Image: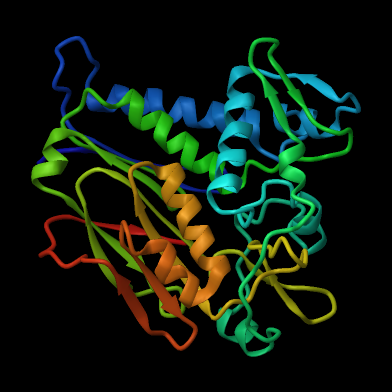
Length: 323
């Protein structure tokens, strides 16, 4: 099976597209489709990145008005973040930007080597599941699509974060629905589709966050798969403590829950991203409950990889998805 395969940086991560042949005669070839998809992802990144001062997201966060005019794309991104918060019971909270910055993630960490995860785990505080913030600031955001507005209290800031990557992967998958098979990988938030993928699923290799080897292989013929973990974005702070990007909404501090990565399957990349992050924040016991319906993988701090659901098939093709 021949596919066009291209990788490029965006959203602070590595993007990858695999595109088979078109099944509708009016569609462009895989290479041209990949260029169109890449252009869309780069526009998405430019408009919604919290690391670009001229982005629409930064403009929203800096605007002193209660009601802010917003494009359909920005409203969709906010809607995705609010959906993730609702779906996770407030654990995946898109209003924790201040806490993330206080933890040391105020600028993009692309190209910055992460701290040694084992060293971070050795000095981390006692493990405990994360919890929602009772204030639930995310509920203060309101979308007014008729007027093209986002309403929220002045000073309330929004972080599209992982939900933005999932939303983007799903949007590109919609663009590629007329192709025989495809993979859209937005920095670990992956969407798979096409009729040929149903008959010959991709075998997604989940990277072990401690060894960088393959922790498990998951057959995916369609839908979303996402991994959330600690290995790619963990750093040492000035006081010698370690931090990462998964914040416990209840405390405003990085969450240390006893697992180091979680991979989730779902019908969409947005839902898979939400489930994976929820599993990470809950720890092993809660992760098993969150992932049991669709299936997934969690990796414990001691290196054990635990498969949840029925995920055993012989490999046909191999991709690697990192946290």
